[in-house]
Length: 197
Ligand SMILES: Nc1ncnc2c1ncn2[C@@H]1O[C@H](COP(=O)(O)OP(=O)(O)OP(=O)(O)O)[C@@H](O)[C@H]1O
Ligand SMILES: Cc1cn([C@H]2C[C@H](O)[C@@H](COP(=O)(O)O)O2)c(=O)[nH]c1=O
Image 1 (cartoon, rainbow, N blue to C red):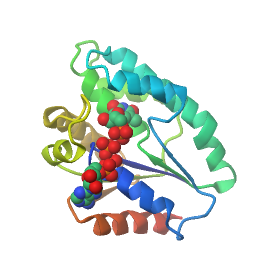
Image 2: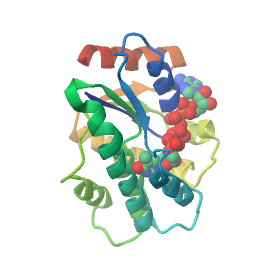
Image 3: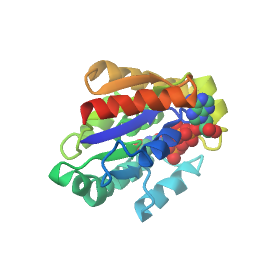
């Protein structure tokens, strides 16, 4: 089963992911992974994140290349024989974030749809996605505004894209109020995963 954690910067995904990793209720052979990855593709993505002037189309394809390698080297092998894979960010991050970045150009009638179409023939959709829901202002504050994506204005556009994704796939998404205290957020995420195992 492929489980993904999604949400705005600062919504608490990594905090939850680290606790899941240490939780005995999950199979001991589960794979815990993340995007961007720590491969050389992920390092290229990181260079783009750190470049305020990075070309937005080039950036989409850097993230997408990282996703392709992540799928081949980590996600698909981890899912073999019914394995559990838990990923801190995955393809929905691309649809929501690059969908928002590409909307700043006028090349795409529907940028989110374009990014989805690029992935559709070869990606592996998640079975369950925990969406940690947070308002853009709190997200920008919590994340410390350390990169170009972490502004309330941009995150408001990203959140709208996540809203669209959730509306299109209500069975897959479980929304968790990320303003709740960390223990409550964790319990909600944990029980949603355990229920589906
Ligand atoms: N439920 C919560 N309530 C208040 N603060 C929280 C909560 N969960 C996490 N935090 C704090 O918010 C900050 C961001 O958390 P975390 O790194 O887990 O978020 P993230 O979604 O992984 O962010 P990013 O996408 O930017 O990596 C950290 O300082 C963390 O301690
Ligand atoms: C996977 C992915 C990530 N991003 C953005 C979101 C964050 O601002 C950074 C790094 O992610 P992290 O969780 O804070 O480490 O990259 C993106 O724009 N598109 C993506 O596909």
